[in-house]
Length: 279
Image (cartoon, rainbow, N blue to C red; front, side):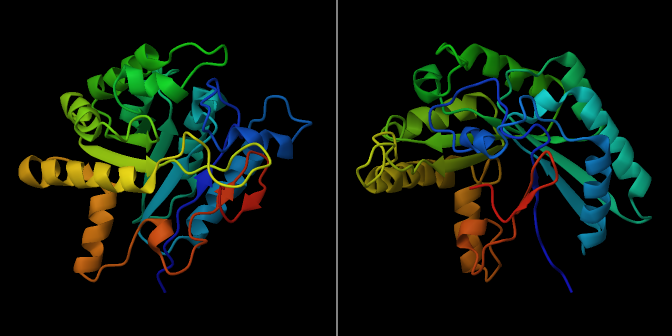
């Protein structure tokens, strides 16, 4: 029986070199207050890889490395992960690795490795600098835009398949074509738009001022959809539009929020703890 799932692995836990104001995972560090710099051990890594392969029912097995910022686990960690995957992979099976990164720590050494091992990379960019730097900042509050752009250009230089993840918030949703045209100029082939909905941090109910307004979110998608259907179908893949198309073709959704049952995207933390979702 097929049992499709995707696991978000957190090799460095919630540790991150940025302090994006809307990040929902930085707070998970309070789950492990005794651990200053978490990193998955080789023993746990191997146990996880064996379990993941054994649980898979498809011939193509996907590993998804997340954070925090997963590159903080170090390149040697990922070299060991690939070695262990090859060690335990049954004949006739194939492994695909995906890594979700903020892009700021990527260099030629990293990208050469990711390219050689056929990694797919997701990189977080919220649009042009005025939008990106609104919430995606370093710990001291400075800009991250130039570092992220350098990382993205390195992914392109090494021909690494990359997907742009753009968080839609109250600031950038009013500029749909500005954001979309910027990604097109970057040569984006895969784009995911993620609506920001976060609770207020004070005692009052409701969502934060940074959260995307539902009407603005809908208008953003309409404007981008019209542009996409006119000029870019077959050239750019946009996740939310493909999910909608699945309904028309009686296909099962791949995005967890549209599935009848959740729980198909669990999390393995740096110490082996297992959660049903990274929220």
